[in-house]
Every structure is written in C-alpha cells, then in structure tokens.
Image (cartoon, rainbow, N blue to C red; front, side, top):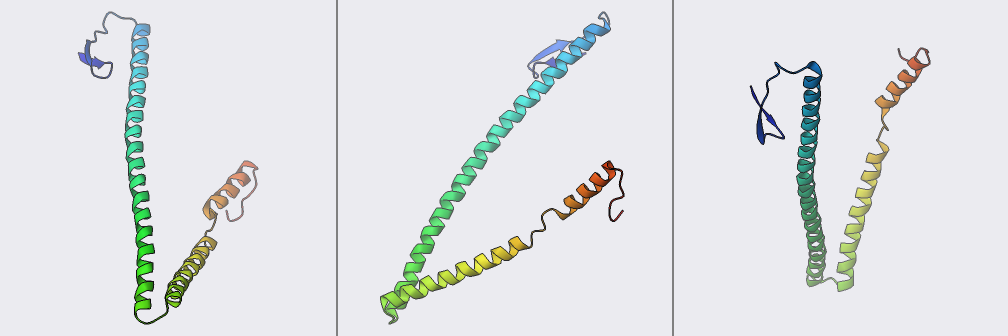
Length: 144
C-alpha cells in the first residue's frame, strides 16, 4: 500500500508484515507527530494571511473614516456659508451649525449611556456560577 510522508511530497511504501509492534508504534507516533507539525504550520500560514487581510481592511476603514470626517467638516462649512449667503451674519451661521452638532453629540452620548446602563453583566453566567459553587460545596442552590 502506498502512503505519503513529509506532507505529501514523497510516496512511501509501507509493508508491516515483517516489523514488530514496537516498530509500528514508533512509526505511527512519528507520523502523527509529523501530521500535527504540518497542521500547525498550515494554521500559522493561514493565520498570517488572515492577519495581513485584517490589517489591510482595518487600514482601509481608517482611511475611509478620515475622509468621511473631512467631508463632514467641509459639509459643515458649506452649510454655514449657505446660511450666511441667505442673509444671516457669518458668526450666527457658524454658531447655528455648531449648536446643531452639539445637540447631535449630546443626544448620541445620552443614547449611548442608556445602552450601557442596560448591560446586564453576564446574568446567566453569574447564575450558573452560583449553582456550580453550591454544588461543589454540597449545598442546595437557590432556584434548584
């Protein structure tokens, strides 16, 4: 029967009829060790490729966010200048835009704070941990 050795690079003819159990066990152990080593090498190679893709994608997101921020600044200036062109004084137009963004920031901060307050801090984990501790102490857990 023909099998592969060293990652499929060299065919090896296996004839187990004339060898002892110790020799066969040693060969199987060596082959398993080699298989594990090759699988780890494959995992490292794939992980390195994935890490490069993650870094590239993250870099692209950072650049896109930077450009979006610049667009927001330019749009804000455009809106303020548009308000000024409609007859408002320049300082009032820029103040209106600034107050609008301040209101948006406060609203988003408030909503974000409310979302954080709703975090339950692992309720099921706490419950199962309490049950596990009670079982380990040979007590009856609440709710069992």
